[in-house]
Amino acid sequence: MGVTTTGTAAGQGLTWSLRGRGPEDVPVPADPGPPGGRPARRATGRGVRVCVVDSGVERDHPLVGTVDGSWVVVKDGESGAITVEPTTTGDTCGHGTACAGIIRRTAPDCEIHSVRVLGERFSGTGDVLMAGLRWAVEQRFDVVNLSLSTTRTRFAPELHHLADRAYFARTVIVASAHNTPVESFPWRFASVISVGSHQEDDPELHLYNPEPPVEFFGPGQNVTVPWLGGRTIRTTGNSFATPYVAGLCARVLSAHPSMTAFQLKNALYLSAANVHAGPRPSTAAGDIRDDSEN
Image 1 (tube, rainbow, N blue to C red):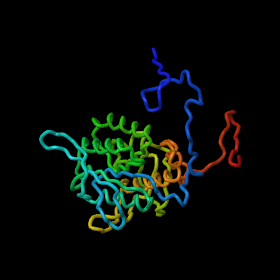
Image 2: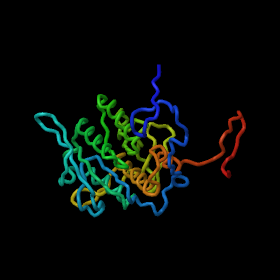
Image 3: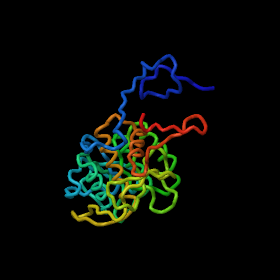
Image 4: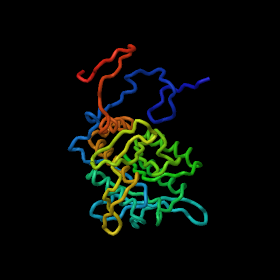
């Protein structure tokens, strides 16, 4: 037997059906988003809070600029208790700085925040990653860049729950696919925006994958990124395509802040270089209708 709740205020409890209320009782201020999914030239990420969950971000790097907040996930060696604390330690291995620099290059006016979950030599654990991502979702950042994944299947259910929670709260998780064909998470989940890398020379181009679970490809091969000590390096990996897509999300949201997560994913789809509008079949079998001029 199903249970029906009525008169539930937005955000309070679960509503399985709409009883005793009509359209006027559930108004939704909508944002159609950018035409064709492409962010306007004036959209620079201003007003959008992006969180980089990674190895930290080096402060004062000329290609990163201001870091608006830095935290670190700390696990007590004796009790195993995990906390998230403010930090000034910067980056432990360069990976987070590289991601932050790509976001800054793509959405120059966005806010960049950092949560360090990796240590030196890219070391980290699933429970620390979970804690950092959970904290970022709880802070309701607009975009979370996660150029990380875990192959530990025991974390998959909780990660799935967290990804869905972020999706419904309008926190967009942009997650990197693993660089090798192995099962890992959370990029496998439909509630995140999953990213791999392409080999095209155009640094401003992204593609849609018609055969998911990786949904989008961004520039991530042989790219120049900021690194420790104010340096730059050239590197390759899905990790570096992901912040490009995160930056695009920030740009779209800066001009259209009321867009939902699924609208944002659709904007990326529509603006992908390999997606072309064309004739669509009508509901009548065999009847082809061209709506391109309608």
